Image (cartoon, rainbow, N blue to C red):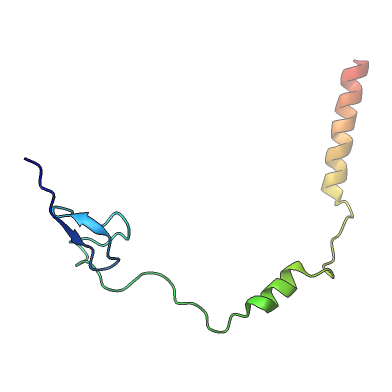
Length: 88
């Protein structure tokens, strides 16, 4: 005979089987006493989303297109290898 009894997780409210030892949704368990507080970080009240968007996605962002020395060396090695392979 199948036991269909359930209970609500005291932490997140998810419906769990009566014999559940932990909640598959939030991780609360018998071991931690079916915790009543969330582990999630508190939101930073000083965070300004509009300022963040302006800084990250502004049109004034400087993008350097100058190749670095190691990039030039790698390109030259690849071109040299290819020319030796073709002429080889």
